[in-house]
Every structure is written in C-alpha cells, then in structure tokens.
Length: 417
Image (cartoon, rainbow, N blue to C red):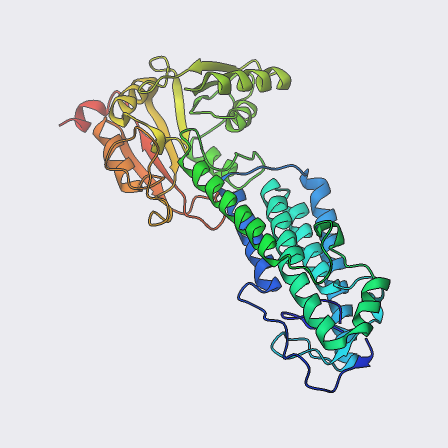
C-alpha cells in the first residue's frame, strides 16, 4: 500500500494473510473529508472576501489541466489496488502492499491526487483563500494522517514496508518535521498545527465580516451584475451617475466606461485612502469623466440635482445614519432619477450576529433586510419601483437590489397628497 490507508487503502504484491493489526484508527477527519472541507471553506472565504491572484485567462486552462491530471492519477492508483486484491475503502484492513503503477514513484498517490484536485480549484478560481486552505489540508494529512498510517503498515508488514519506505519517497516528506523517525509521534503536533490553522481561518472570516469597511466581493465589469445595472439605472452615454461608497473603485471604473466622455460619474467614499486608490485607477485608465468626492458619516457629499442615477452597492448596511443620508440622496437625484441599493440580508446571523459598528439598533447581523431598506428610503421621499430578489454577485448567497425613483416635478404634489 502506500500509507493511504484509512480512507483509501493501498499496498505491493506482498500479501499478508494473518490477522495482523485490525487497521489504523481512521478518526472522523478522513482525507476526503479534509480536502472537501478545505475546498468549501476556501470558496466561502472567497465569496465573502475575495483575494484573487491568478488571471482568469491563465488560471482556467491550468486548473483544467490539473483536474484532469488528478483524476488520471486517482484512477490509476485505485486500479492498482483493485488489481492487487486489496480493499480500496478505509473500513477494511490492508491485505497487500502495492508497489506497482503510481506506487512506484509515490507512497501516497491518492492523497497526491486529492491535492492536485484542490490545486486545480485554486487555479480555476484564482483565490489566495483556496491556496491557504490547501496548505492547511496538506499539513493535516502530512502530520496527522500519514504518520498514523505508516505506523500501522510497519506493524502489519514489518521489514517489507520499511524497505518500501526506503526506496520510494513519501510525497509529503517535505512537510515532515526534521528529526522525527517514522515511529516517533507527530500526531499531537499535527493536530495542534491543523487546529491553529482552522481557528485562524475562522477568526479571519469573522473579522472580515465584522470589518467596518468590508463591502463584499469586488465588482466585475464582465460579470452578471453589469447588464442588470445598465437596465436598472438606465445607463447610456451622457448619463450622470454616482457610485456611493465606491470602495476600491471597481464599479466606478465600469460606470465611467458605460456613460462615456459625455457622461459623468461621482465616486464617493468615507475612507480617504480608498479615494486615493480610486484617483490612481482613474488616472491610469485615463478617464476624464469621474469626480472623486469625500463623503462623511451621514452625507454622501453629492451636489444637489447632480445625478440621473445613484447606486449603493453593499454599502447601505454600513450606514450609521440612514435617515439623514437618504434625505441627502433625495436632494442629489434629479426629478425622475433612480436610486438603486444593492445589498444582502443578514447571512447566518446565528453564527455571526454582530452588525457593523455604529449602525442603527434594528440591524440584526451583518447585512440589512430588504424590507428595512424599503421602509427607510421611502420615508425620505423616494417612491419604490421594485425589489429584485435574485440579484447576482454573491455566488449561492442571497442578494437583492431595491430600486427607487424620485418623483418628477409634475408628480410631486400628487405624491404628497
């Protein structure tokens, strides 16, 4: 076998017919569960706090190639086990030590296949989070699972397995602490490392969700949101639009391209550093139709009647004084103009019930219910157009867009009757 034992059993053409040890104790965290869990955790972290690093044009072909390699390696390893007559599932003891096929070059080809599959997802998605969870899963398997299985195989196959270990490298040998012999326990140390990595990942996730400046995933001009924003905001060349709470400026740049040189974009944010980054991006893109504006806690900083449309993307749930802000937004929108609020309801509030600092007490968790947004904005004088409850941009997590309109001058008296 190699050392892949309690979730996938491996082995050589050297049968063992005596009872021997019943098998290594698999524990609850078997390698397939570890790798699957680490992939899901990485994807979840990337949804909430994206940290891209691989260009999509490079990552997807690379990810596809790695996925095919992982599947081919897995199939080859399982085929060798079945040909040798040793069980593949981890609920049965190893009967044969396999050293043919991929086991000639790796003692753990199945775990290697799992790692390659995870790496393919890293490349395809292009996320630092998935790379970090890959390191965590490999560390756990190397320091907890593999040493435990090696001890079992030494007890079961004796010198035959020891000679195999001497001739074929353990694929995770670079992760083995120096100075430890195969019989010395690395389990407790590995558990501490794995637990520490998991706790740090959870802490970072919660910290990101509670961060006062976190706005969710970055806006992609080629993503599914842009066509819908174009329709909701009625964007066309010459439109004057505001991006309130612009953050990194992704949406600002997209809007500047949409409205063209004859249009105008107001990009506002409360964070001076974010504004500097936006200015740098606008300069690099050579846009001359963007005005960067310093916002304040209850004032977006927009001039009166400046905009045909205003959008707040994942910003509204951070407002500390929504009533005052909404009144100023009403003044900034021209009669007949549109206000769009893209946001999300509190997600898993039982897990992180903390709202952003300084928001009204009626907020429950990180996010804001669409009904609250509608009540607060219509109270300022806007009329509700519609709430789109299948807004894209957060993967499987819920998101919405609430659309409002400022009454035209001819409709204003009727609206206040």
